[in-house]
Amino acid sequence: MIVDDQQPDPVLTAYLERRPALIRYFSVRLRSVEAAEELVQDIYLKIARRPAEAIENPDAFLFRLGSNLMLDRIKRDRRAKRRIEAYGVIYGSGGEPAADEPAADDALAARQRLQTIVEAVKALPAPAQTAFRLHKLEGLSHAETAAAMGVSRSSVEKYLMACLKQIQDKVGRP
Image 1 (tube, rainbow, N blue to C red):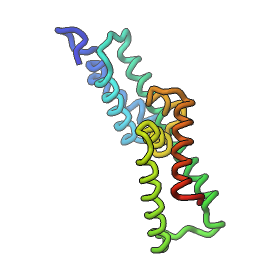
Image 2: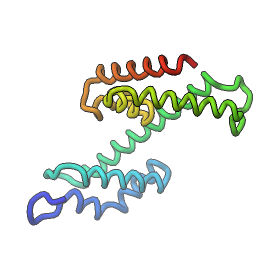
Image 3: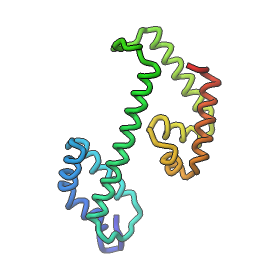
Image 4: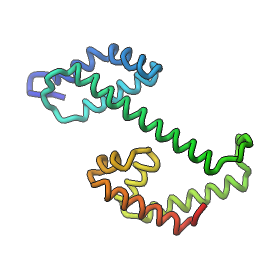
């Protein structure tokens, strides 16, 4: 990425110079070298895709960008964990330990139900499909989904309601 015709992008140059420091910094915060390396790679992807613009303090920009990405990842992981825990409370086994594998007939019924859900979602307009994928599958909040799609939060809520109604009509209630 080039800011002007002769000079390399100072943010990219700072990234290449500070990459080991970024990994050390985020390794401590994430308590994992592997997670820190993934995060630092995400920083690179963000700066490589951004429009060329002058940044006054590239080092501060990199660490702030990494911190924001780290917080986003933590929030997404927490939401996923809450969904999994809520699923266990709603559909749990009443205190009995869960089997490692479901019964064959339960697995077949689940696959058929999933196929019906997939077909129901595919029958919806593209924006509703996108909202469903971002919110339900990738774990983004309504506001984050709206920002990613470039629409209002109200639109996202309407898309999701349409999806859920379509699924309910096709599958019925659990």
